[in-house]
Image (cartoon, rainbow, N blue to C red; front, side, top):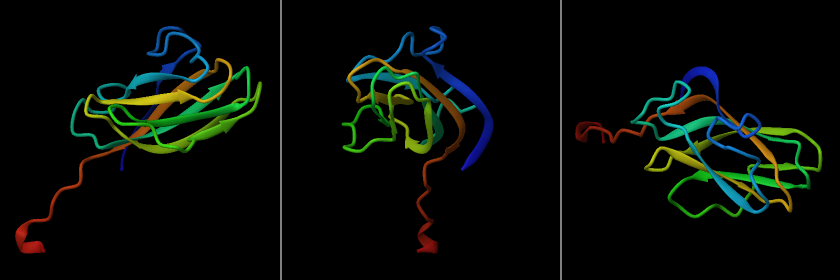
Length: 130
């Protein structure tokens, strides 16, 4: 894991940082993670993110996964109406440098994404090391 200075890369409350408004019920928002917040533009396998659900209008969950693949059947964090909840996770990065955030609740939720580190692709061992 390579640490970076923690940085906010998406905040639906501001209307300017990647997610323009609250993520709607049963909707997905893409978030560019490479090339922002101290994360290199290439050579990144996964990012260390802290994802926060802020002021949800209904109880539910957020699921975070790499773009370009189907979402997993598990939640990354669970929340309840009106409660702000966050969780830290290591999320693989899609080939386009993005992750997806899905709101699995019956109403909109404000979403914040902060990054604090990344991993590089695993190198194959040299033939003489096997």
